Image (cartoon, rainbow, N blue to C red):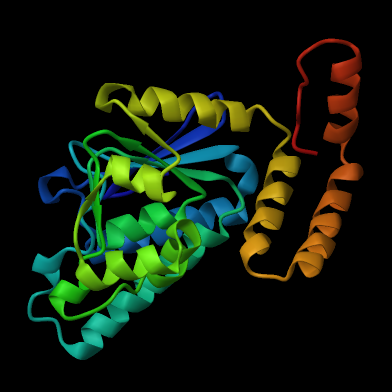
Length: 261
């Protein structure tokens, strides 16, 4: 995969790392980066076997500072809406990705950058990371699913405080509020994220993808409808070779060799 604004590498352990690479702009998203993030995640949707777990991070000292406001200066309403249509496609591609995506927030994650992190399955953050949804201070509002994903992570009251004030907050605050799963020392972030990604990647790929689908429905459906969805997802794992391999490996006291079939 070759991109202008991203570095995408999938290792032999089937862990893929997607690095936003505009460090001179604190990895602010210009239109090209928005398009490439959309296309990258859409590609993994089409070919979910290309990786077993993904890590999204930023190059340099920042994760992503949001949309590139220098590019947006002087934009007409029509051009702004066209660009935002790409943002909408990008976020849908991220949230629809069947492969687990971990955000490794290595610095500032502001506005659309924070929304990218929220769109991932879970978040690890460096101690130096900072977060904010600053849109209301700029005459707009969150438009990359921030008003949907943030309340699911921290609750509606905390989300209102974050969104309506636009005030930045720390990694430790994000952890205490439930938005971040773990805070790591700056130097250990990628190693710790890599370790959990490898653990996910070592599990049966179909099982992981089906479990992710069912978990995503937990906040969208009533409990019994969600359970019905879970059973449908579960039944798709029963007929796999990996299900048989997992049970055989357990009984034979060896590591399973999953094929994603």
